[in-house]
Image (cartoon, rainbow, N blue to C red; front, side, top):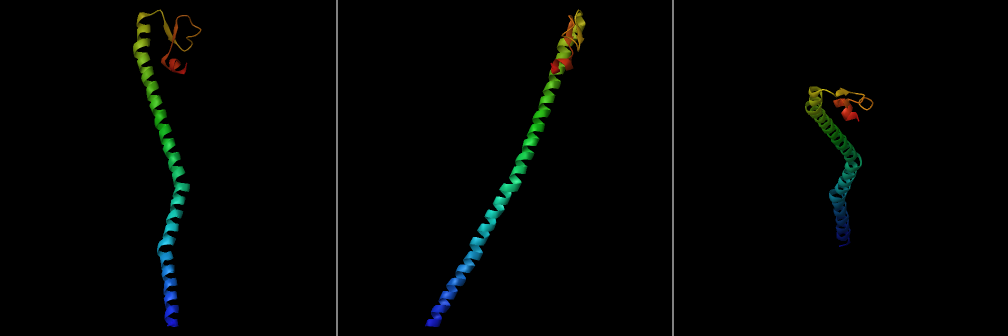
Amino acid sequence: IRLYGVFAIRQGHMLRKRLIGKFVIPVICMIAACLFIFWFAIPSLIMNNARRNAVAAAEQTVQQFKLIRKYYTENVIAKVVAEGGLTPTYNHKSEANGVPLPATFIHD
Protein backbone atom coordinates (compact mmCIF):
# COMPACT_ATOMS: atom_id res chain seq x y z
CA ILE A 1 0.00 0.00 0.00
CA ARG A 2 2.79 2.32 0.77
CA LEU A 3 4.40 1.79 -2.62
CA TYR A 4 1.08 2.51 -4.23
CA GLY A 5 0.87 5.82 -2.29
CA VAL A 6 4.35 6.87 -3.44
CA PHE A 7 3.45 5.91 -6.99
CA ALA A 8 0.27 8.00 -6.77
CA ILE A 9 2.29 10.95 -5.41
CA ARG A 10 4.78 10.60 -8.26
CA GLN A 11 1.98 10.46 -10.80
CA GLY A 12 0.47 13.63 -9.32
CA HIS A 13 3.85 15.34 -9.48
CA MET A 14 4.32 14.25 -13.09
CA LEU A 15 0.82 15.43 -13.92
CA ARG A 16 1.64 18.87 -12.53
CA LYS A 17 4.85 18.97 -14.59
CA ARG A 18 2.87 18.08 -17.72
CA LEU A 19 0.33 20.78 -16.97
CA ILE A 20 3.09 23.31 -16.52
CA GLY A 21 4.67 22.22 -19.79
CA LYS A 22 1.40 22.25 -21.67
CA PHE A 23 -0.20 25.42 -20.35
CA VAL A 24 2.06 27.73 -18.38
CA ILE A 25 5.12 27.71 -20.65
CA PRO A 26 3.12 28.42 -23.85
CA VAL A 27 1.25 31.23 -22.07
CA ILE A 28 4.55 32.76 -20.97
CA CYS A 29 5.89 32.42 -24.53
CA MET A 30 2.77 34.13 -25.95
CA ILE A 31 3.09 36.98 -23.45
CA ALA A 32 6.77 37.38 -24.38
CA ALA A 33 5.88 37.38 -28.09
CA CYS A 34 3.18 40.03 -27.53
CA LEU A 35 5.60 42.18 -25.54
CA PHE A 36 8.16 41.84 -28.33
CA ILE A 37 5.58 42.94 -30.90
CA PHE A 38 4.45 45.87 -28.78
CA TRP A 39 8.00 46.93 -27.98
CA PHE A 40 9.59 46.69 -31.44
CA ALA A 41 7.03 46.34 -34.20
CA ILE A 42 4.32 48.80 -33.24
CA PRO A 43 6.55 51.89 -32.84
CA SER A 44 8.03 51.37 -36.31
CA LEU A 45 4.55 50.83 -37.75
CA ILE A 46 3.35 54.04 -36.13
CA MET A 47 6.37 55.96 -37.45
CA ASN A 48 5.89 54.63 -40.98
CA ASN A 49 2.20 55.48 -40.86
CA ALA A 50 2.93 59.02 -39.63
CA ARG A 51 5.54 59.49 -42.36
CA ARG A 52 3.14 58.23 -45.04
CA ASN A 53 0.40 60.57 -43.78
CA ALA A 54 2.79 63.55 -43.72
CA VAL A 55 3.88 62.89 -47.30
CA ALA A 56 0.25 62.56 -48.42
CA ALA A 57 -0.67 65.84 -46.68
CA ALA A 58 2.33 67.62 -48.25
CA GLU A 59 1.40 66.35 -51.70
CA GLN A 60 -2.17 67.52 -51.19
CA THR A 61 -0.93 70.97 -50.12
CA VAL A 62 1.26 71.20 -53.23
CA GLN A 63 -1.72 70.30 -55.41
CA GLN A 64 -3.80 73.01 -53.72
CA PHE A 65 -1.06 75.60 -54.31
CA LYS A 66 -0.85 74.59 -57.96
CA LEU A 67 -4.60 74.93 -58.30
CA ILE A 68 -4.53 78.40 -56.70
CA ARG A 69 -1.68 79.50 -59.01
CA LYS A 70 -3.54 78.21 -62.05
CA TYR A 71 -6.71 80.01 -61.03
CA TYR A 72 -4.78 83.24 -60.33
CA THR A 73 -2.97 83.02 -63.65
CA GLU A 74 -6.10 82.32 -65.69
CA ASN A 75 -8.54 84.69 -63.96
CA VAL A 76 -6.50 87.52 -62.49
CA ILE A 77 -3.29 87.87 -64.48
CA ALA A 78 -5.11 87.28 -67.78
CA LYS A 79 -7.49 90.18 -67.01
CA VAL A 80 -4.67 92.44 -65.83
CA VAL A 81 -2.64 91.86 -68.99
CA ALA A 82 -5.71 92.21 -71.26
CA GLU A 83 -6.82 95.52 -69.76
CA GLY A 84 -3.34 96.99 -69.42
CA GLY A 85 -2.37 99.62 -66.88
CA LEU A 86 -1.06 97.05 -64.42
CA THR A 87 1.92 94.80 -64.97
CA PRO A 88 2.63 91.46 -63.32
CA THR A 89 5.97 91.65 -61.50
CA TYR A 90 7.83 89.95 -58.68
CA ASN A 91 8.55 93.39 -57.17
CA HIS A 92 4.90 94.40 -56.89
CA LYS A 93 5.22 96.08 -53.49
CA SER A 94 7.57 98.80 -54.70
CA GLU A 95 6.03 99.31 -58.15
CA ALA A 96 2.89 101.42 -58.27
CA ASN A 97 1.27 99.56 -61.15
CA GLY A 98 2.57 96.10 -60.25
CA VAL A 99 0.58 93.05 -59.30
CA PRO A 100 2.18 89.89 -57.96
CA LEU A 101 3.09 87.06 -60.28
CA PRO A 102 1.46 83.71 -59.47
CA ALA A 103 4.59 82.39 -57.77
CA THR A 104 5.05 85.64 -55.85
CA PHE A 105 1.41 85.52 -54.87
CA ILE A 106 1.98 82.10 -53.24
CA HIS A 107 5.22 83.18 -51.54
CA ASP A 108 3.67 86.30 -50.05
